[in-house]
Length: 222
Image 1 (cartoon, rainbow, N blue to C red):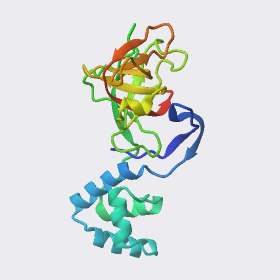
Image 2 (image 1 turned 90 degrees about the horizontal axis):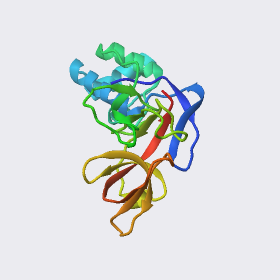
Image 3 (image 1 turned 180 degrees about the horizontal axis):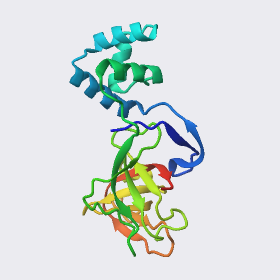
Image 4 (image 1 turned 90 degrees about the vertical axis):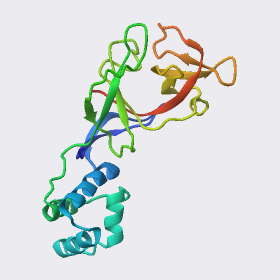
């Protein structure tokens, strides 16, 4: 578990919410990720939310009520820098230094654009304001060039029906469990989909059964 303190700001496109290629700027901690640390710190120290509220108010000289602490714990409220330092002092548990999310595998092996979960427990830095459940896959090789280059990280967090991702680039899982990065096109029947390759050199996958499609939240050069 970790907290990111500097992020690369982003710009939107038609298929990705953000790409990390603009100037670095300071950002607030990822709410939900830091909330896990706070939950663990309170449990380990035996400090209640009411007690934390009282002691934060005393230490910082401003009112931080029980409702505010509860929102911190639930990840619904940011934890300011001075609050973070005070919580570390009160609970005796140091905050992590970086937000990490699981790296699920690598995409772009030879003729296939497939995310292969190799069983590793590798992790990578998370984007700003990552949603719960965010994971990443890494582009490997040149099979998705020029749209996506070797080493790029693709982050996704939610699974949608393929009908909601028509004509968009997405991470998709087929009925047989394979995972690809493809552009989703209508197939020959309502429940079938043609998956267009990112690189035009590779053939499309015609009339596939798609279990889910995940919008790409971020693209980040590694």
